[in-house]
Image 1 (cartoon, rainbow, N blue to C red):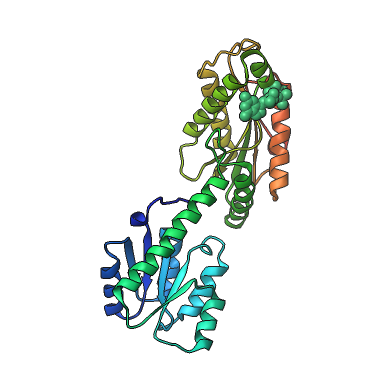
Image 2: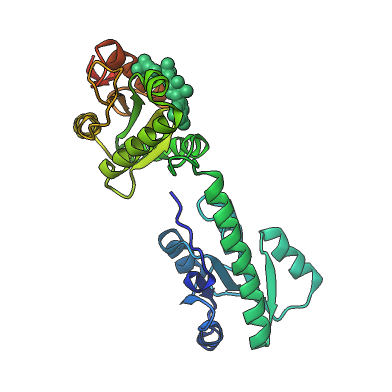
Amino acid sequence: MFEIVHSIESCTVLVVDDAKVIRKLVSAILKPVCRTVSFESAETALKVCHKIKPDLIIMDIHLEGMSGLEACQQLKSDPELADIPLIFITSNQDPKTQEKCWDAGAVDFIEKPLVASTLVKRITTHLKYKVQADILTNQSFVDGLTELYNRRFFDIEIERLLKDSLRRRVPLALLLIDIDFFKKFNDSLGHLEGDQALKSVTRQVSLCARRPVDLVCRYGGEEIAVLLPDTSVHSAQQFASDIVKSIAGLAIVHPMSPHKHVTVSVGLSCTGSSKATTPAQLIAQADDALYHAKEAGRNQYQASVALVS
Ligand SMILES: Nc1nc2c(ncn2[C@@H]2O[C@H](COP(=O)(O)OP(=O)(O)OP(=O)(O)O)[C@@H](O)[C@H]2O)c(=O)[nH]1
């Protein structure tokens, strides 16, 4: 999942230069603009990038060890870091070197000797673009009604989390949650009341998904998907049971339900014992389990038969 910042002042700029004096100078000039973190080598900078996810990188082309160009190429080939804009610091006016910088994926150059006002204006401009792009990206992945991540985001994340789960040999659990008799709810109380119920249910599911790595998405109309990385079948079952109970506990009146209030059915699948190795398989297993939960009377969860057999 990604985090976004909404102002330039809260952006973090990574400064990579083997000359301490340049690192200090850039950090001092940018102090009124944003946060800076500086490193001597590209190797260290790339390592920390995964952790601190900077909003912009300023890097010298010529560095001891891994060159700036090489570091830029590595950054751009890493899907998690590729969107971070990188600006080279260079005293080299040679068109061929500049061409190499563009080819490596840089968004701009800053020439040495550094001119403070130019540095400030360039960095402010690039950070403004970055903040705006992040906001737009975030909006395109968020569902307007529930404010959950949408199906598009789910499709990307399940692919990424599944690969990670298989690579690290740790389980990934998927829950598909569906509101019971929701058509009847809308028909009896109206669509606006239905929207409010959907919002309350999604809020409750989000409250149950307490770990920062847990991902709650609006999967379809009144269906919610929850991805639980590093979660065993046993823990996922506990989680599913908690969801069922806590939604019933909201006690949202549903005149047309045999339970008399809003309930959910949950289908659960998990990598590992189920042998699911693709998103389609994991989803199909959860969907199948959800069907069984509906068939068995709703207001309950069922685990995929691929898990229990
Ligand atoms: N209010 C509201 N209703 C929605 C929304 N998205 C989907 N729905 C409704 O959810 C209902 C889903 O109906 P069905 O798929 O028949 O399922 P159900 O009535 O919940 O029955 P079961 O799933 O079998 O318990 C439809 O009437 C949709 O219009 C939404 O954003 N707001």
